[in-house]
Image (cartoon, rainbow, N blue to C red; front, side):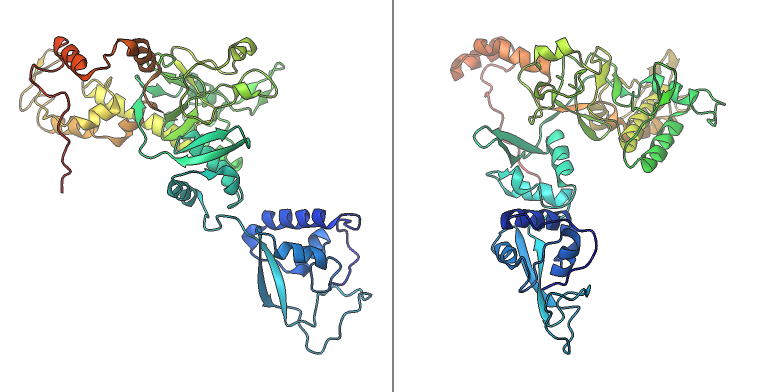
Length: 453
């Protein structure tokens, strides 16, 4: 057994063996990255003696049979072949010195092979019939946040089981993503207000440049371990606070309220969010929390509107459930610069980024802005190559927000007209011909595309 030591350790004398077992499991789970721990180490921290012949030998026996615990026989670091058996009265700080080998205890997660987010996603993708979330929550430290991120972005499908009140996770498979019309931008007040609080900016206390905005975000991110507060707010007394603001809302060129609902997943700048559905209450009710699903069939509860939403979702703003991280912020700003570069070359940037990148047309401009285009003109020769390069800028891919599945207006149109769609194939064929969507005699189904070698 392990000798007592006069230090402050938890009093476990009045605890049952089951309670002691729980304490040991919780301790080992919190220290699972340390591997198996010796009985001496466990005793020094939580006061439970798991050594051979120790006070809590019954607890040690229970732990050996517990599927959440693994044991390893290791060399005893305190082994002394000349030592006498410990009688339990000595005040020595050392553990058992008479045994050459001792049993060490460690936490055994069900999926002990998972070490990071990539491994977590790979494991879920292997479970085509689903895996209970509770079986994954102890895989490694930080796994809960990674699971939340995977559900937020729709990388996995979470289904709530009302019987055991647990969520089961399934692989999503190939996602179907749709771009939301219009470009997204960092709100103009963000740059202006940050500059007002930045006397060292390039503009002598005026508005900061886009690069300064990102640099400040990066610096703040390092200091605050991921909590980014780009815009200091003023309280009623006019004092500056560091509550995050503005980077949680992006501007949209078109009305996004008709294309996505509060609570649904949205991709901005390479980062996944949920459209904010938080209400103006200290504690968020379940109806205001983001659902497990990345899409919704109906709007959130009317009670949320009565309580009032924290962030405005209007014709030109898109509220997010968390702050844009510095990388996503940089991507949105770079996309704006790429569009401005196209416009400076006289090319419209109103098309979607994916459309710009997909279309590889030969640039053959004859007239532009009323000026003739020739070999030596402003849009000939090298300038045509410059336009081609500007159109291929990968930053344009961050110009628009994306979502899972069809936009809200398309869904509503489908549901409103589904009864008008013929059930019989021949009736459908006649309807397509009458609408001139196919020619008479043309097959309804196109031949399957062949895979290129």
